[in-house]
Length: 218
Image (cartoon, rainbow, N blue to C red; front, side, top):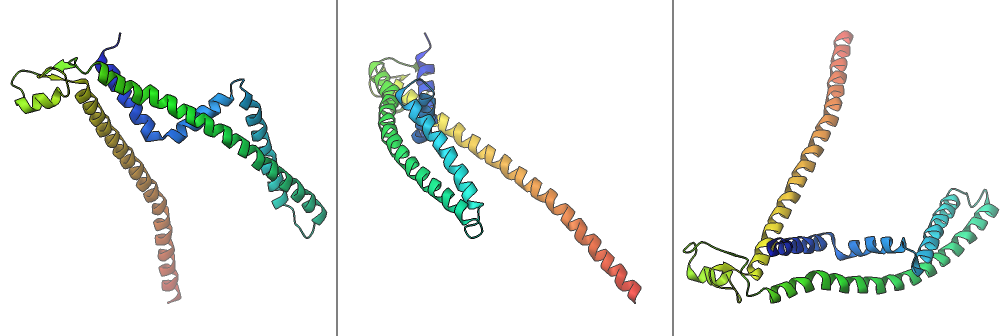
């Protein structure tokens, strides 16, 4: 059985990832995966995708057809475009209604699976020490705070361990984002510098050529 320390840390990490990427993005991914299964909505989802492809194809062809030079063809494409547009709107309305129900169910299950489990762990193991801190390492009031609410004084409670895990995860997350931003910025500056160097060289050669030509004219 995995250690409770590890379970709490992993749970806090998953909650942080969900909050970072957003519930909407995760719900969309799960919705697409759900429609890959042999479920009632998979057929309508496939039909909607085919309808979108056909709509985009007709719209592209209509935009490339002149309404003055090829009016008959353009009018036919326009009728197809409007018909497909109405069908697509109707299909999306039905799909949105089903997806809202799906999102509500997923949100409820995700809350129970993450926050619900976290609350259950904190209630069930509130008296159990996660680990003990060295005696005399901290003043009494600090030991009491670390053991809050019901763990033995001198130990770290599951609530305090959860807060510490979240603080460390946030710290590393911010550091990772800052490091990625620095790397991207440095790469952008390097590419910009490489693109500017040939331009400067061409400008120098052009100026030098103009000076030589002026000397010859003199």
